[in-house]
Length: 320
Image (cartoon, rainbow, N blue to C red):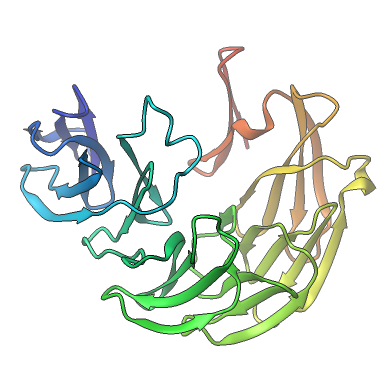
């Protein structure tokens, strides 16, 4: 099922299209609930009045309200959201399958069923990531400075199961198998947790990001070295030094089909070009290494293929 919105985003019309391309329903959702965006489970509506946020989820097929919630302002200015032109507004996105609404001194995180997951107290919620088995890893900071962070394993009812170290690292790409292992950045390196929050292993090294989790391997970005580790044990299975191919450029994107980690790298000396390097997830061997023209951040995975969009050149290129 595909849901599309037409018209003004504060008074939208929802079109529900079936797999056969036939329009199943066409429903006016009304102007009473504020702005709108399509999200998992329906159409999210939100509006801000006097600082407080009102949120609702509508059924796209008939316009009925599935749930409502409110959120009070917090104490975080949020750079870019407190300019005079936008200070009284809010924006909604979908992050890790959760519904997130943010604005100047405002943030709220909901499940598609309407359960609120961010900390309702004075602590400021930085990130919420599903952990499996109906639990979530919620990272908070005690002040607007963000100097000290705490991560909790929480349930949808708000209860805290335990405190865990570090901050979750969300991979840029996965193979879609929903491996329950969660990786966290800790002072000593990276720590792996099972769904209950119990430590599986810890590996050393300053890891900036997790690029790929697929095929039982986690691909870690340590600056000028990309390391493959066994997801079950944390054992290093291979390392790839990017300057071995004559480049020390930054990784800006990652894709996987479960067997290969395809990394897009920017060319620091030429902002209009980059390179694509494909690594075998099992042993780290370079399967191919290609230069390309265009923005390295403009690659997308569509229907099992890599697609590069170049609006300036009015060109769309699909790679097999």
